[in-house]
Image 1 (cartoon, helix red, strand yellow):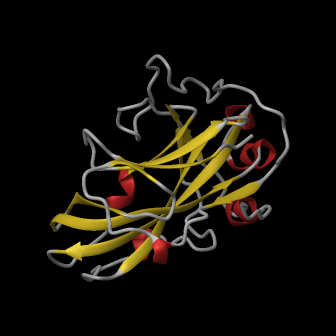
Image 2 (cartoon, one colour):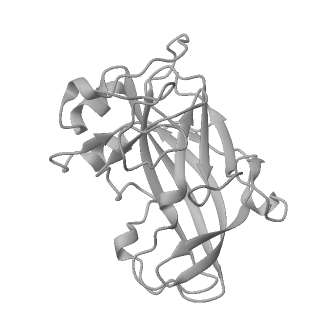
Amino acid sequence: MLHTRSAWLRAAAPVAVLALTLTACGGNKDTPSSAPGSASGSGSASGPGMDDGKNSADTVAAADEKSAQSPQSSGGVLRPGRSGTGQYKEESGKTTYEVVAQKVHVGTEAEARKVVQSPEDAKGLVAVTAYVKFTNKGPGIVKGLPKVDNGTEVYADGQRGGLLIGAPEALPGCEDPIGIDNWQVGESHVICQTYMIPEHSTSLEVHWGEEGAARPFIWKFDGAG
């Protein structure tokens, strides 16, 4: 693994207010939920503890995309660096994408408390940013604001985290979807999503799929503890 420090906080610092929305597994990730087994309420969540050895890290995929096998097309578990192919409904119609979760950046609770509206919302939590590369495979141009990144979710110890609304898009290596227009066939973009998870989670998963997909793609990474 490679480790870097504080890049997430430096990018987030200019943001005045970030709204924390917690979500339940299987629900609309823009809608708060109090379903059993999900993070809910003020933003606190619980998870298995582990010895505290890293305060901040980038958990980077060890596999090289160049050595990855051909894209998987039926959903399911993939190793970091291997791509899957699926469809997403954009404003201009159904688009096929090749998708790969490249890495996740794990922050610290101290950093998270500085970028949410109420520091108490981040008690016991850290922010995890998933870097996901999307390649338009057709059949045509994606016009207007792409929505494919809405299919990205982060799970910790089997539970979906809380989407951090307003998280910075300007992290190194992340692109702002607002700046993507007329996405050409064959063109790739890395679009990030940031979620809050319990600080000492032992496993992380990046999920991607269209809403309601029976079998999303899942990339497994080391935990945040």
